[in-house]
Length: 93
Image (cartoon, rainbow, N blue to C red; front, side, top):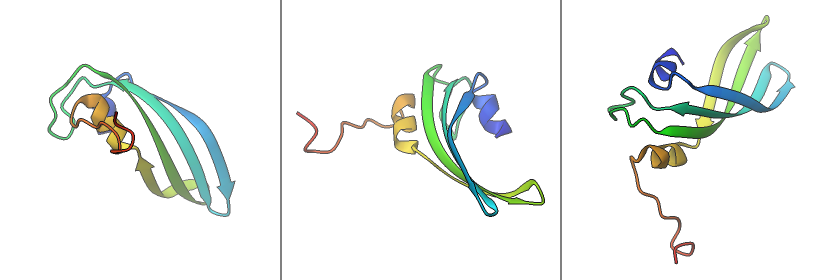
């Protein structure tokens, strides 16, 4: 997370949903941030981005010991200009 925060220093995330059961906590977040430093080889674009992700945390004795996350990387890369995505063939006019 610290590397991501250096690349998007004004990043802010909001918890949209949180569900807990047993030793797991499921969290859905939305975030925003400006790309100001190299990110996975991509030079800074200065673009403001938004993202969504879902993470599952395993908690033991009140501490997070494992975390798995899935993010919408396609939309994120599209916003940074890494890829051009025009939609599925039946969506393109």
